[in-house]
Image (cartoon, rainbow, N blue to C red):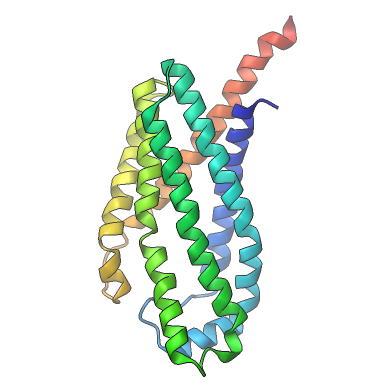
Length: 227
């Protein structure tokens, strides 16, 4: 299988897995950043099983995103005839995203595994909960770098229509704005969820460009198959 097609399929798989991941966590009514220790302990006692199950899905997400990112770098570099620097920026952002979200899942997993002792160790629970939420809210910065880099790579190389590059830049801007407000959100302030539309655009962008890479590979192989 051509690597470009593999990258496109990895992008589509990434989006599917992230949607499943978020639906699974969203269905559990996870406490907010300023939750009391009793609420945190109660949540992980009641939903520790699904949290640990989600942690099994996470490694597949971490494999899919870099494969897609390198595919974007390859397609935009081939189109422009040289290594596209914005594609490199997108790959760096994807690596950062994986690193940050590894921390989110790791702290979630520890809290779930220690659910029975969380109430008895409030200082440990609070510290780990704060780290977990800080990583989660600051995640927008890495997403901004990845989506912004991918979008500018497409725009500067002409690898796709200008609309997809502009669409991605709008999403990157919303993600960055959400990241700037992250410290206030962590303190429990009621702020508009600016980063959420950006996150949805991030997923839509990856899905659309992933499908495009698969189709580009199919078109390239069709003439070869007919000779």
